[in-house]
Length: 85
Image (tube, rainbow, N blue to C red; front, side, top):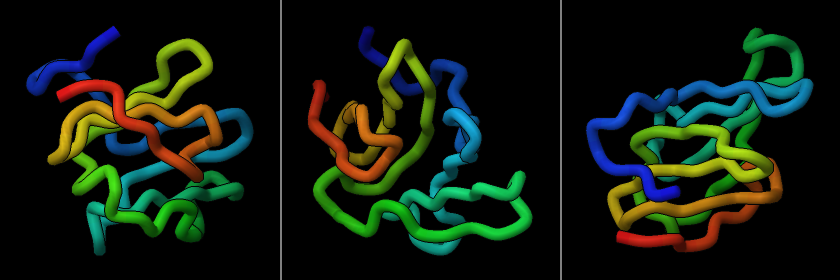
């Protein structure tokens, strides 16, 4: 499934018992919360994917629309692989 700009996605998603979000301080980072969003820790610090715009869960993957295209993660946002432009 390809995600196109303009499709309805979210910047905060629930993944199991955690929540993931695009960092409000640096959109190249992904943060996670294990306490319902009361506190956030950085999970992904890379720049490979570019700036994150939106996140969505599709099956067992997290799909991200970024400034460099569509990326996916099967590791709860720890690593991101390129899917398409």
